[in-house]
Length: 462
Ligand code: PLP
Image (cartoon, rainbow, N blue to C red; front, side):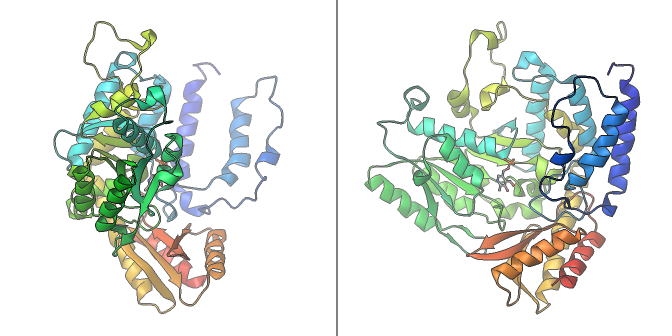
């Protein structure tokens, strides 16, 4: 394709995108294809000759689209949302066009400088204290890995990268069983080992870490000659929205001089609404916090906002400066690749700039508030129906339930029946050993009518 042909295809694909979104309610939310259905339709060898865009686009519609699960469908109630609001999509089109690698300030000063300012906007929006600095990571998993590597280096007096872990005391990191598996993976990748991820029992309706148990486990490890390195807390855990009492948990981390990280990948977006901030009261005590604007806030994947009380610990852990990455003549510049594991980085701040300016914080708050209100309303409707048993109450817009008197196999059958029907999409999780339906409202175009459809489907398919 040459640049003369590009505008026609750009316009056609942009029309296709608008049409896709306007008619998306007519599609089943979850792909209805069987394993292998798509692969079998793809040529098994690469073409030697060029294929026209007309053919490629027709094949895209015919082969690819049936195998897509529609994350932008307003009746997507599974997992967590992955909203791609239109202004953020448009920014991404510009970013793809420019296709700059923004690893250093000089490789695109606008990207670095806008990233600094956008993270400052987000810091203010979620009301973190002045002084926290931010960086955009590709995913919350990467932010958590960066935090765990910082815990490791700090605990080893900054010698781990050089000397490895052998001959060192066992490093111990504490979290509850409600954290996302990205924490387990970070522990594996950092070489700390799953056996050194200490699970603190949870208590209360928010299923948060028991602070007394946390303190006792740290003390026991010290007595056993192990080396506590960090605490990972969560606000809005994946399964049920579990949230630690940050004021207590992070204070304990401080008492033992441990680095702390808060994973608020989903729930963090909710903190733009002052009335939800009680959920993470005490967060200002954290050393590191992540939330994903690419989940609930509307920024196209990928975009994880990672805030640091003092970025120098992270930079000391990750920075490496071969001659080819030096920026001579400019001291004290931020080179964000020194704040993250991957070197290459996309210009992710642009979509935040488009998104936040286009909606304004108040426009974003309205959406989130609606989602929370509709989820709570639906939960109360199901609670009033004897056929449903609410297992965990809504935390923001997420709650879980079982069908009264049904076993796990029947619950899985119920979830499959609903998703095969196609009008809505939900997923299951396990709470205290039992399968439950996990229901969250968070898609940007969802309306109360869509949530009512969910209620009707969930009743009809019992
Ligand atoms: N933390 C929590 C609480 C999550 O729910 C998720 C994903 O849903 C993650 C971390 C991982 O997010 P990411 O895909 O950005 O790595």
